[in-house]
Length: 199
Length: 199
Image (cartoon, rainbow over all chains, first blue to last red):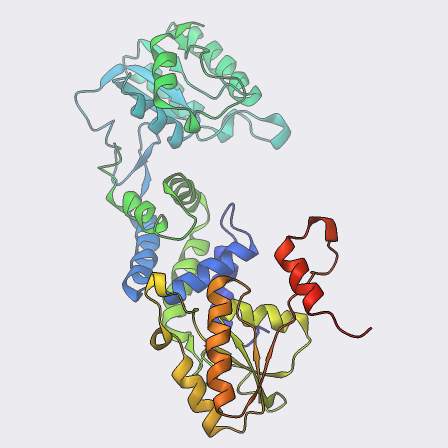
């Protein structure tokens, strides 16, 4: 019965493509947007268009960036001799929130997962190795998730880095196994950064 | 630390204005949108802009419409002598899904709620009375929610309609299909007993 409402149905369909938003939530959101003030809807639409126009990834560490370099790589105060390796930008933000780390990062954009067909070439591992040889990196702090894929990725990267004579550490295992860094409280992440150990 | 990402932060802020979407969900959605293909993001933004440009409310029944009249009011097959009164367009859709009704509707856009400062003037009640006097309405079927506000609104509208000599009915109040009597609240059972009908 919504067949004669193409614009409404289209918005519903687009909203329900988002993760965690099913058909009923999409309908509820569409009705909300129909009622809310027009400025807010326009602002949301413009923010969406602007996101893809302005936000990309840092050419050095692959964190999200609005420009060539992210704010961390562009900051001369950050210690560039230490690289913290994370799976996703969200994980980087979790470590930043802990305020326990003033080094640099490298975002892999995933973890090794042979079952899903994700191998080293699908991650930013070659770029990491290039940074290690070109920049004077002294320590690699592996902060991949404590999941099967994250641990496998940690082992793989540790092996590669040690071949290059770089010190490799791992976040302390104070974080419960199988959980995502993104959702851990800042205090726990801080403890994990401070308690990192030789790999 | 997201201070240097104005476009990303702006989208997060706009998303978190939506009902049921908190800060963490907004961040997750923004990261998803950053990674998804650009076409989908553009399609969502355009659907948002199109919604407010094309979708409004039917000038007769106040259901959502893309044009002057909604699909139901524009349909000559629908019986215009019966008006079903609902609080929201979503309620209308629920009745349409039941396929049990081929009359017309009138959407109030809310229910009387003195505590929230919502009086008769905030609802489409004057417009309903105008329809009753101008169109040859024979029956008003009140389908407001069975909540305190919905019942108060039903009483108020029933009173007004009876003054106009129109037959007023209310959706049956009783036990929902497929449910166990054991788990139904006492109020509903009471209504079902009082409203019992010939078998």
